[in-house]
Length: 172
Image 1 (cartoon, one colour):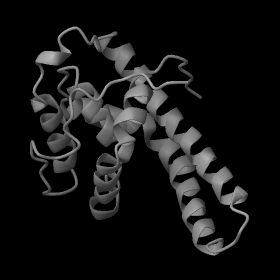
Image 2 (image 1 turned 180 degrees about the vertical axis):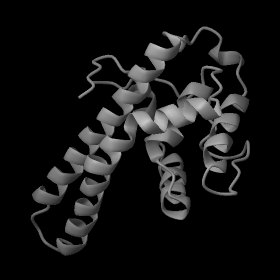
Image 3 (image 1 turned 90 degrees about the vertical axis):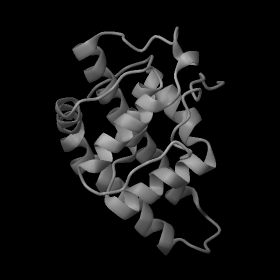
Image 4 (image 1 turned 180 degrees about the horizontal axis):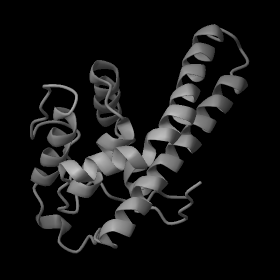
């Protein structure tokens, strides 16, 4: 299992996905076209540093996380959804919350794997030095390349997903 104590991708995702409109947009893409939310966020994160993914990069990224997604994340998501519907209205929500936390830990493994893969392939090319000058164009390129693989949906500059200044380390 990939471990990464310092994962700037995870930090970015906590802030970016923490915006309700981003979470909503990600979940709509997941439900409507089967998009992987972690790959959507990965596209955004790399784009926020001016990094543009290639088709080969996306192929490799999907391969890096495929087994973990299929064997761990997706089954946990299914269990969480089922339990949430079965426990609706019950006073004790500890069990559904525990499953949600386990799913979140599994998602973090996905993001660790993606971040490790990127760093191994390209080095630490996620410097924030020139970040203020980026317009979000690279995020759009990454998102639209990824989404073009499974749908004809295109993200535009007005999407809440395009937010190049979203990076901030969460407060502990």
